Image 1: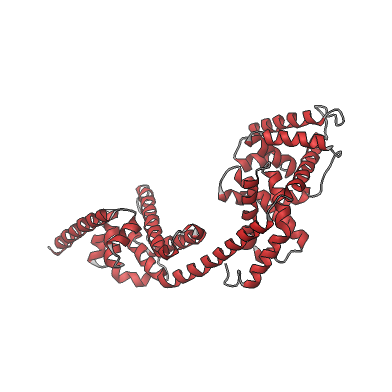
Image 2: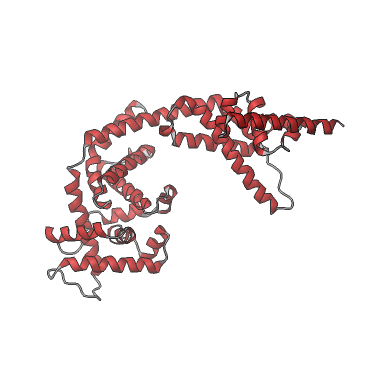
Length: 389
């Protein structure tokens, strides 16, 4: 995120975009969330947060295009909720295109308010998987194979869910919209039905949205996002090298240490709003580095068991700064220590942290810190004395 991304001008532009589109987007979110207004508010906020992060793209669109981008992004986020996986959003690059192709497409006859109400009740009562499949097929125009891949289901259950939803909806259409089992236009009819139900509910729900409260929440998030950028940049400038040195002592190679530290900064930025005390951000970073280093070492042990000749570590730009240190007898002996003893000694004697700070970084008690440090120092002395002999 660039330094000027959340400048006062950009913040005003984002707030203006929210004010123009949030109410309509909330109505659309209510339709996709089957009337769950709490979930709809969350979907709207997540969509505008995505808009902030992609503002360099979104700001170049006209209002109609922005509306399409926001609605497509909201649909994508809604679909991701069916699997509760953040990374799942990246698996659906076609959602926006599918959504845009269906905009304004109300194929088939116009349905009466009575029919729309009955069908809306059916949609609300559908099981989650059935609703997901029906929404993707008839509202977002996805094929069964695409739905199966998106939801992580085999194709037969997808077909079964579609058949179940199909029967329930057709039953509500009544004699004015007769459909036979072999009607080739059945999908077109149900697609039109979904578009009309969605538009009908969208209009109904949009007027209930508290735009003032929503905009206040969005401004708060924008300020927090800006604060996170500035804080992380400052912490990075002040502590990056020291944290790399810490990680290098734990994972035993600098390139991996750099990755560990970068991952810790990324995680902290993403969870900045959850930090109860931002003054403890450095302690959070140290703990993240220690935990990630443990994961790296455990993964490495598994890999090395399956490799007769593991490849040598590749040098990095800062590799030379550690070469002399890594050749010392102390570091050689240190690497032989158990994981927790090595961590305690590195944190105490290389970073000069207090027992309380070490306990926080390692996620253990101060008493355990004392024990690991004492045992580690004893083992270290014994190892060095054997080397001298």
